[in-house]
Amino acid sequence: MAVYDKVKTLLVEKFGVEEDEISPTATFEDLDLDSLDLVEFALAAEEELGVRISDEEAEQLDTLEDTVKLLEQKGATA
Amino acid sequence: MTAILQAIGTAVPPQIVTNDDLAARLDTSDEWVRTRTGIAQRHVAEAGTSTSDLAVEAGAEALKSSGGEVDVVIVATTTPDRICPSTAPEVASRLGLGTVAAFDVNAVCAGFVYALATAAGLIETGAAERALVVGAETMTRIVDPEDRGTAVLFGDGAGAVVLGRGHADQPGAVGPFDLGSDGDRADLLCVPAGGARRPLDQAARDERANYLHMDGREVYRQAVKRMSDSSRALLARAELDVDDIDCFIGHQANARILDAVGDRLGIAPERRISNVARYGNTSAASIPLAMSDAGVEPGKRVLLTAFGAGMTWGSALLTWPELAAS
View 1 (cartoon, chains in turn yellow, brown):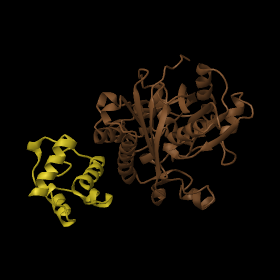
View 2: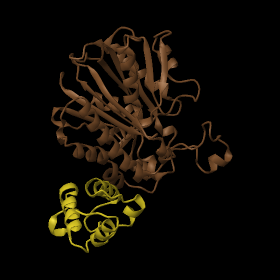
View 3: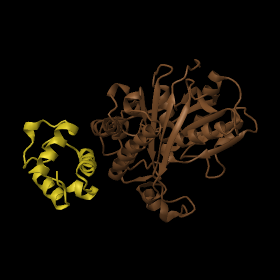
View 4: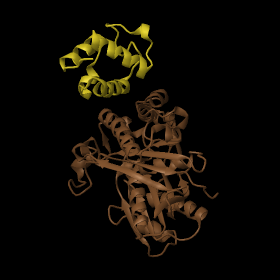
């Protein structure tokens, strides 16, 4: 769950999401994050986790669970 | 020798187009545009008003407040009056500057920083004593009025500065600079037809290839990354810390890009200048328009950073001068 925790920290610290709103099944939409936030999330993931999420992939991101899975597939380790 | 900022002038066309005005003919809304871009309105040049008209107005204001002559005029623009010749000679002539050196620089939204660096270089080498640098655009001429993704973003306007000669420790000292480009990403933001590569024929018009096309997401990502990286590189070169920056003036493309860059650099929100709500993205005019709104005290250190199609980017440091009232 290390990558999940890292994603959680990112969302709280850089996107102003309330910690208690975050859960594995929460979607970006649930967290009030729009398409530009997704672009910024992809950029932050690249900087903090060293993996590149393409814009097409970023557009498809749904739940945090799926997002973490994608990041791990790309070799992210927190 | 160091280039010294001596005066600023601005010009925007009187016609204001609000988000609601655009929402009346496009599938968009004031709320959507404000939350995605921070833009509330933009100034749009009336038919018959060209880039040179705005450049002359801004240039005249800058020259009036600083007095005297200049021996070079550089116009940064993406929207020259004509493909050939460049716009600067006509601007110089209309300003009554006679037969001075005059040329355009096209680095799109980073154009003003590129032109400033060019002018500073001419002054530092002794090739010029005083320079007029103008960022002037009529972006609404190349934006597709039917493309809701770009039509809401851009506005028209001009900003000009006069640079003179002085010393590096004097208020107004300009430099150093950081400039860069990435031509592998030229297609992300471009007008596909009407240049040497693709003529402006009926097929091009049918595809609306005579207008600005933009891959918004990737441009957003590149803008945040490149302006942040360029600013950091410049601070490192100048051996300055981010806390040494009193005022941060980023290219006014989108309030969220400015926030993202400011956050990444760790610049306190009250030190960031933003007037994108009133003008939208005026491309090469955005930095001087924001400088005129900065309200900085003389001697304060200012960081400029810009990013545009090309892709191009550039950053500059300056200390704020005592500006004469215009």
